[in-house]
Image (cartoon, rainbow over all chains, first blue to last red; front, side, top):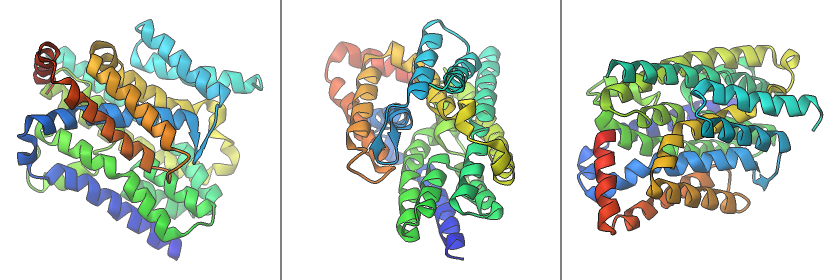
Length: 103
Length: 236
């Protein structure tokens, strides 16, 4: 039962935050500095997410070889101007392949 | 213009389906953590925010305090509020439609929308991502939860790299074109990684928003400030 409460509370809380951003008065965006800030926020948060998803396991930092290799392969694919889906497939395939080989 | 929209939709569907498939991992992990199949599915339907969902089941699995677990999971969703603020003028939704739109303001839909060259393609990308990822993520959660035992570890299929690779690919044009963006990105990664061992999961990524302040400082140099502004205008 308590798990249900936690599930519902998390769901409602997550939704409330999403809604808050969308209905916040756009007047706050009139300031040039606030506009610049919110324009750069996705760059900051998403790159931070990439770093954490790649390097962290809970609160511990870990170097997972196949995962790092997969992401490195994605970077190479991006440098070679590969299409988006190819980048994803290459990243997953390299990580999965190295794991099959037991690395 | 039409080709921009087509490519936005293609990007959106690609991200939606690829990242949505990692719902398999979530469903399987949720059941392994001790949630029922229905609980896993309701969490995906209602919370619909991968990182928050993984955070909550992590606490359930570890036998931690569920109130703190739910609070942490919600905090982790705090970045969606910032995304909503950024996307609101572009999406231009009014009235009750915002209630529906809000639910799909997440990392992936924001990443695709903000990667597009114009507002029309941004909207197309947003909705293509939103619809495909909501559908795929929830079906995959159900499949993962039901078939947890058979599927094995989703890492075997490299699904743990798909998320980071997708975000990197979507950010790539901004990272390779803008000096300010690169500074912000490097700073954000440094902040997040350095504070990971010190703070509860979810907080380091939120804290990394501070890195966006670096972009404000850099605007003081007039020439780059001017080009930044032009680029932003053409983007928004």
